[in-house]
Length: 260
View 1 (cartoon, rainbow, N blue to C red):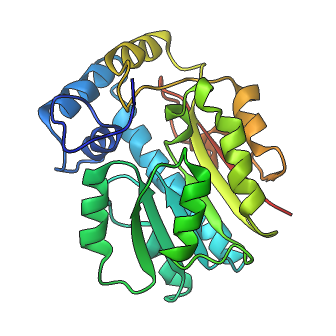
View 2: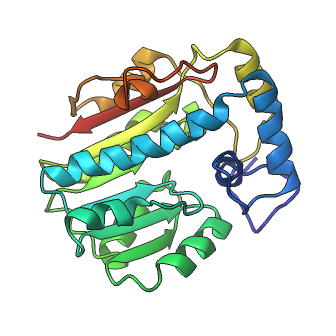
View 3: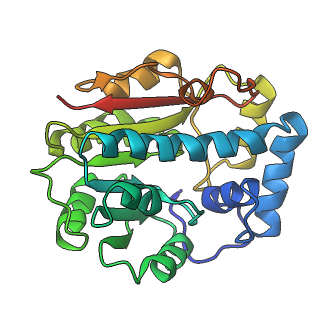
């Protein structure tokens, strides 16, 4: 089955709309809310985890921006939520170039509508799994210069890439296109998550674009091959934010790598 979002499709859950609902947004449907509530029945703290994930994304942008990176590519950007990547990037440099990329046509419409007035910000409707095509679009449509450092964020993306879609090779393709001094930041669903969470999300999203593949710490760490693994390393993403954040039954690893 082709797991690519097509049209609005209110009859099946979409990861972007589920995440939007968990963040308190309104761009979601009954099927997305029902999917989210089945998770919340087991792990009500997942709403907090959604915000942890959002804050990790923004922290990664700040880390890269503080070292002089002025090009940001948000792969799997999802429905816009403020503050967004361009807002944080522009705190350091209002001319920083930002590209939002998502394969969900509804997300693209939202991004394009909200970002259309920003000359340095673009939205692309493209699939991160088609790296060669996307890299071409980033250069031709978004003005990304891969001879200069970039920051690529893949927050809540790689666990939607199935094994037969070769996620490690996919990350390596983006890595090879990145100049020294570039950053990669991502989150990934961990196989140490509560078994009922894994079972419920796997069953509910089977053969949809929201199907998840939970992976081990070693598997996730392998995505950083060729990068310097920044401290605190590949850890539950709460540890990237503060020392006193609660554990969650749904565990997302967070990682930031730098290409030297």
